[in-house]
Image (cartoon, rainbow, N blue to C red; front, side, top):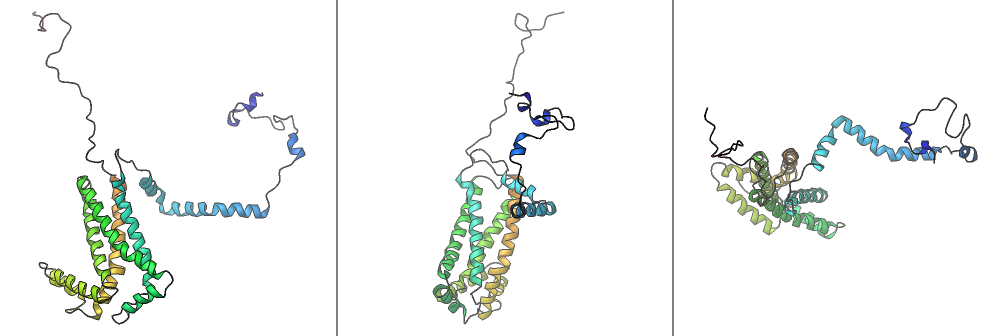
Length: 296
């Protein structure tokens, strides 16, 4: 075995011009027998096509510096004892994404009109391809999202994750809970059948009993002093535009704070106390007797 085959290439002594390991000034024998094939234009084009997505991502990352935030989100430290309770936030986010996607498809066929809303829902369920399936996902997904966000808030409260320095993140979570409930309430009227109509009337009247801002909130939701045709348009605008935009902005702030501050360990795991020297009432100086200093 030659020494050159053991030592890595960067550590070898560079050969003189015209010399190589195979022989002085002579090309290796395998190159004479089977010379390397040059890649064809099709092969070069295929290599460029495979490298194109990476080049695009690198171009975007150079201008946005998003890899730092993504790295902090995916490779942050996870406390000991993390379990399935910590997935409730991600599950709520997934439920919101499902609601957004299905809501966009339903909006393509829905008509926010007092005379045509119910007919458009009937058309979605009976005539549109997979319309009933998408409508069912959106209808039951709203209940799933409400349940998940309540469980997520309960986990945060009982685990003490609302304490310093995460108070702001807790406040953002409370606002997200209120917006989720409002989005569920405004979406309930959109089918505009008898049940949704009278349930919305009762809900608006209950809001009107609130102190100070209650009557103004009811007038805002009704789009006037009485429940009428413009109320459906007001609910549709709040449900489709106002609340989802606010939720997306607050979710971004919420995830930023989670990546920055991290997550807390479960309350049943206590941190180990640092080992310190035990208090000593009397030091032994190596002198026999009762330890009293010698008299001078």
